[in-house]
Amino acid sequence: MREGHARRATPGGRRRPPRGPAPRARMMCRMRRQTVTLKDVARAAQVSLSTASEALSGTGRMTETTRRAVLDAAAALDYRPNSVARGLRTGLVQAIGLHHLHAGDRFASHYFREFVTGALEGSQAADYDLTLLSSNPQVPRNRTPRVDGVIIADPIGDDLRAAELLASGLPVVAGEHLPPGLPACPVVAADHADALRRILDHALTQGIGHPAFIGPDANSGWGVLLRTTFLDWCRENGLPAVTRESRFGNADTAEHEAQVGKLLDAEPATDLLVMSSEPIALGALAALRERGRAPRADILLACCGDSPMLSVTTPGITAVDMHPRALGRACAELLIRMIENEVEPPAEPSLLPAGIHWRPSTSRAATRAHDPHPAA
Image 1 (tube, one colour):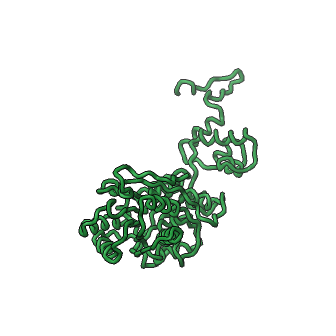
Image 2 (cartoon, rainbow, N blue to C red):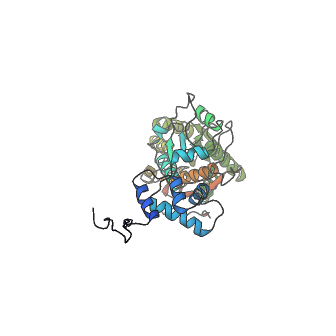
Image 3 (cartoon, rainbow, N blue to C red):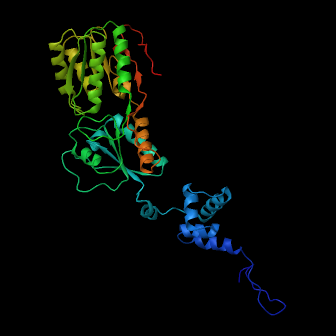
């Protein structure tokens, strides 16, 4: 026998029990060699199963001593909660889904990559998995996804799967404003109206008198908001308003070049062009070059969404920073709190501040543009 485990005779001829760990410690040692259950934790802490469950989840009414005893027992046993068992008790799988109109294609977008990163941060902080859902917008799903709730990024009106998810009964949070026709759900979005108004107010100080806007049609709630804000601002300032529609997600620069060219030919007095996306902005630069018109000197340019490319064009183009990473994280955090019944679904959109990267395209002077109406 190994040292410390030899049995010694007692005066009455009986064997003494072997020296070693106390019974409770021995039990813990044995448990480490097999799967540890909640029942094991409750037994080690000498509490009921329900008390152990409440102590580990941070709920229930008990003394701090009792709660600490359960936490210490769980740590000593290296207890890992059984997600399957938890799901049977709560009905949750501890996973949220992320839906986008064309999720695979959108990974080329700096905005979408940052949004997904933020959603991952928010889900991981709550120990939830994040699942990217299949996203053919024209084909119905053959089953409800195995998730506890869904984030719909950039909801689009004719996206069949977005409509199905909104009608599924799952908790849903939209990462941008909903277009007309889609069922209502909580919304988290950047404050686009404030950012656009600051850009327009600044352009007015530069002497513009004929602004124009190109952005998504009514299929996009974001597009509806931008166009409405632009038209309201023009009316308030007594300026004529020219608008054109583009298809959400259209990345064809040549198509946008042709569209901007038609606008400039039809409205030659245009001296400010506000665009919703990078492809439109790049198309606009090409259309201006073809017509011999100089950005800044002849026409100011601004974009309602930023990308790394817009900082290296000539001139650099002023653009709205929607902080997509913060937006994705806020969507995940709100959705998980709704799933766990920590908050009621908010009726009004939750707006996050939007920044503006002021670049030479909105300043006729050679100096960097200054925002006369900074965000609070």
